[in-house]
Length: 342
Length: 271
Image (tube, rainbow over all chains, first blue to last red; front, side, top):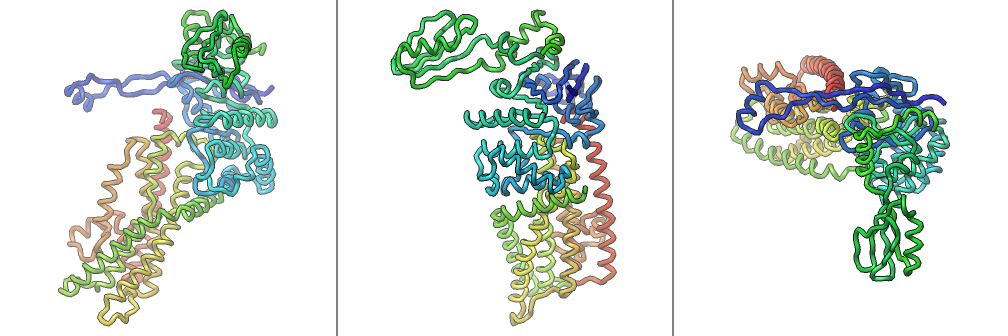
């Protein structure tokens, strides 16, 4: 397999003003001689991504994800370390790299709001120097895959968020990038739209062999799109293994919410704890080591008719916290051998 | 290929500006209010014989040209500042097109549409206002420069507005270093109005103020196009063309180097 992204011992620090004491004199002194402080955003990160691989890159706010992505896309120059993306050095070859990567930021838009998405696609064809024939065939494929035909003539401002995100994805894939950076691609979308976007990204990657590096605070994005998870915190790599390993090791509990025709649903199973109860609605925390979710659902059905059911993972912060605590305890396993095997 | 990219950006910006035509309403209303108000003022001042060498019709045309430029220039500095504050610049920088000239091409497209719409409106209104102000209401209301002066003034105005856009982009780039461009723009705008002669031609300024103004780019940005429209010799038109060209080269070079410096700063500060 060819390597799409290669990072070795990547380091990046920023200098900023040291906080001064909240006094008038300190403020005056700060005007004359400001002390600076160094913040290490990325501290010795190493990993590789193979072509066609889909990797979730997660961590809490301020963990160093954005800085790493900016280094990978050539916007920032690292202090030290080795960086190669699709055979190029990003900071030196930013323009060349621009032709080979695609980006989708859920909170940003590259579409022109008052115009149909088709106009933006045509502009991007020009920006990425796509010949007319190639643009037409590529667009036809994306319109079919992303079901964009009914949206092509509507001004973007009239599209729903889910429809807009499908157009954003198509816009980012128009020049057939070999590596796609996705930053919170499903933020703000409803459940159906989220599922559709995740499915489209996965299918696209499988069809074209596009590598994906996804950052998201929604664990569903990581679970349904990626096959591997990299977790960082405080600029350090904490975890780099397959998704199944993450799930097995750190997602040990699920939150199950049941709406039944019984005012009070009683489920007596090991590892199942009631965390919230309202008439006809019960929220449970299920320890997966002791009881699978399916067993809980069976027990609930045995106790009456279920009108609604939802199963949620613990928040990402809790998973990351668990990984972080594991690393702090010195129980973090070496990830390289497992990467080689996976 | 590179120029084609930027032309595509200009084209789509023109289409977007046309699609969002509702935003012109306020601008047109303000433009009309200014012209009507000053037409009345010049008429009253003219009756007292205090307009100096200019007829009140010429002063209306002068204002129509200078305000046309001032109202047409889109706020590219706030777009750049917003990109830096929101982090959107990180989304745009990895593309195979210069961020600075992408934003410039976009603003230039908007500028062209604004100049067309405001120009047709402002020139039409000026014709009506100057015609109505003649003693018998029969004059066709053209400025002293005639049709040729008006055409030359309009062409110079487009060049001046483009130069204005370059300087505003330069102000926008300052956001990479100081984050908030509003104080810089505020000073720039006020200097531009005073030294550029937004309301009155520089000819009626005191000598010292006029000398100071002529050492800045502001007269080329506002005064010169207005002055050409109300009658200036071929020498003045030639000199204005050279001055505009020189300031444009200066502005483009400054913007280019400021952007390169800004990218290094981004690398140091992380945006």
